Image 1 (cartoon, one colour):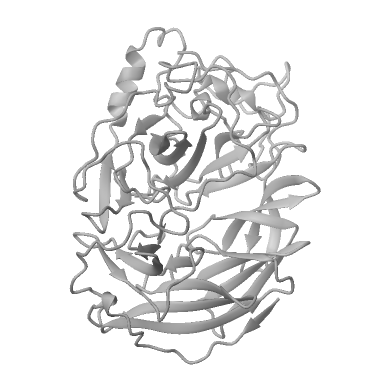
Image 2: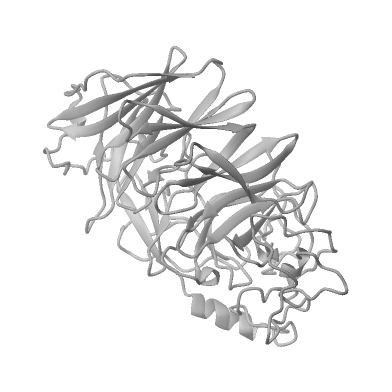
Length: 496
């Protein structure tokens, strides 16, 4: 792969729909000419209607079991029978928009008639608003955009086998464009995609998949255009930031027919180290990470060979990865975490996790946290940019949406965790099944499905009955970077 140096910046595209002043604040952003579907192949959530007022809290929760029309276990909060995920290679569509790590800006590919154009959303003010950033010609439907914390939007275009990168910004009545350069892959069929926004918001990275190795490129924020930072053996997917500095990047590395998560140190020449290896013959992927609490959301087939399940762990913890029964879904459905509540220092079990649930009836939102034993299902706001959202430190979930009436809106959802815990306590049989829904981490019975070095002679950190011992004992330290599963044990099912 080769990188091309950038030419001088250009400004003043002649599209008049992007009027705003030099500070980046638009004068008039109220027209709703674009379609309601957002992003690169975005889809609308049809799980229910929501308030169109961006400042209003979301409506009441849906029924506890949104799968009732499709699932034989209707009426139960926990699915007691195994229900595999969708096929491993069937991933959810890209989110409807991309949000910076600090939540100040978002960017998406919007539709005006039959023409696609980039659009920037400002989210850190008293009211969100959108700024269109059209170029001289419409964009291709698969064009990637990524917001920067300075208000500019990175755009990734493909032309004549070259991957072109530019920064877009509003300038007077048009759109300014700073061309950053290009990356040309030796294999024309090689895939190159942008990684999620870096925590600092000042740099942007891309992942290029080769036949035998994967390259990590710095495509914005460097000194001389795109820079090759690392070459990782095998084909890699995913891309999760593990720290606030944007130094450690987690990738899902496929080697010898197995996928394991590895950590890539971008400041040490791309040094690769194991991160997540639950079992020798399992496929383990990292989906999300929160640097504040260390909470990790994981997808693996270790507890159910041949079927992926969603689990959680803590970076650097001595406890094993856990796979709650409440995160299982019926056949034909898929569940994907897309946001973790920040700021919960050293308390990963209290972090709210937002889940995108896809099924035959559309997409909707689920909220869950490790201390709970069930998922709360919410209808998505009308026109939700599916799969996009972020949490505030106070635990309010922000979901961006757009409709024919509201061009740029954010639904703010407050989650009543206390009510969820009280309802769980009042359910029949709750006293017999052990701890309350909001028990300490490790209090779920299904946590015993994966145990580090478990045998009849070795105590585990959490009792198999689901009751946390008064003095937890760990057989030996087993960091998450090592394999916390030495032998399979029969799966245990949470009851009640």
